[in-house]
Length: 463
Ligand SMILES: [Zn+2]
Image (cartoon, rainbow, N blue to C red; front, side, top):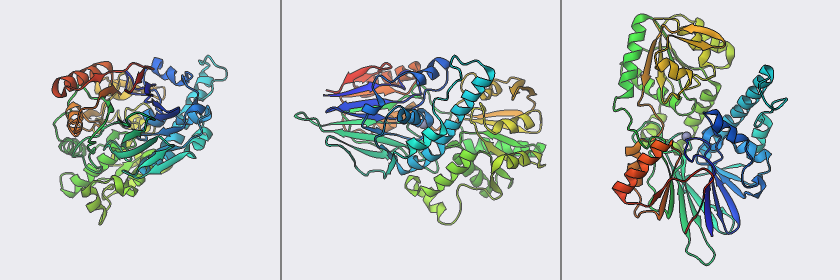
C-alpha cells in the first residue's frame, strides 16, 4: 500500500511537506517552513505526526525556505538519512539554510530582549550549528539522473524553471505484488521564455500528480518589464536621483541585473553604477554563473564571451561599510538589495536614506504581501517606520508586476498539456484557497481530470 500525507502547503503557499509511504519506507518531499501569518508560523513549532527518525529519505524540489527551511529542525529532531536535490539546489542550500538559522537566532534574541516570549528564555527554532549539521546530509544529483532509494523507490529531477536548481520530482514506486506507480511533484513552476534559466520541462506521465497553484487564479501583466525599468530609470536619472530596488536575493536579483545589462547594451539607459547589496544575493549570483546545467541556450551563448550577470559598472557589495559608502556617493545609481518586500535586510538602510528624496525612485518587483513595508509603499502611504524611526515617503514609488518567479494559470495549463495521459488523480497544493479552487475548476473543465484539493494533514491512499 502507498499513501501520501499533506503536512504543509495545503490551503496555503508555505510549509511544503509531502510524505510518501510505501512498503514500510518513508520519503519526505520538501521540508518547508511555514511563513506569513502568526497562526501559520506557529505550526513550525508543532511536533510532526511522524517521528523524524522514522523518515528514510528527504528530497527537496528547490532551495526556497518555504520548501527547505525546516530541514535543520528535522535533523535536530532525529532525521539522519540522505537529502537528495539537484546540484544547484545543494549549492544554494549552503547559503540559504545558515542565513535562515541566523534569522531564527535573531528573532529569539529579540523576543528575549522584549520579554514577549512564553518560553524563558526564548529558543530559536534552530541554530546555525543545526543548519551546518543538516548540510552534511545533502547530496546533489544531475537532472535526469536516476536516484535509487532502497529496494522499491527511485526518483528523477527535471527542470522547473523557477530558480537555480529548481526541479520537478518524479518518483517511481515498485509495490510488492501490485502494479508500479509514478508520483510526480511539481514543486514551484517557473515562467516560460524568461532569460537565464531553462523553461519548465514537460513530464509525459504520472499516475498521481501534485501541482502548485500560487497563481492558479491570476494572469501576469503583459507589460514588458524591461520597458518599464528603462522608463523609471531614465526619469530618475533626469532628476539626479537613485533607483532603489528591494528584490529577492535568489532569482529576481539575477534577472534584474540581466535586464539592466541588456538595456545598457541597447543604449536605452545610460551606464550607471549598479550595486547588488546583499551577501546572499552576491553568493547566489556567483552560483547562477557556475551552474551551466540550469542555463538556457542564450545564457550559455553569452557566457562564452562576457559576464551576462553583470553590468559595465557593477559591484557586489561586501560588508556593512560598503553598504554605507553606497549611500554617500553622489549622483544617479541603481541599488538592488534584499529583502524583496522590505521586511528586513540591508535595503532598509537605503530606503531610510532615499525615501525622503523626491529625486529618487523605489521599484517594487514581485508580490508584496499584506502587512509588509513593501505593500505599504505600494499602497501609497506617506510615511513608514524603519528601525523605530518615522521616514517620510517623497521618492517616486513604482511597481513592476510582471517580474514574478511563478507560472500563472495559463503557464500551469501549458505545463499540464505535456502529459500524454491524464493522471489517475491530481492534487492541488501550494495555493491560497481561492487560487486552488480556481485552478481545480479549470483543470476539471478543460482537461476532465480527477482533481482533489487536500486538507492539511490529510492522508490519501494511492490506488
Ligand atoms: Zn519557490
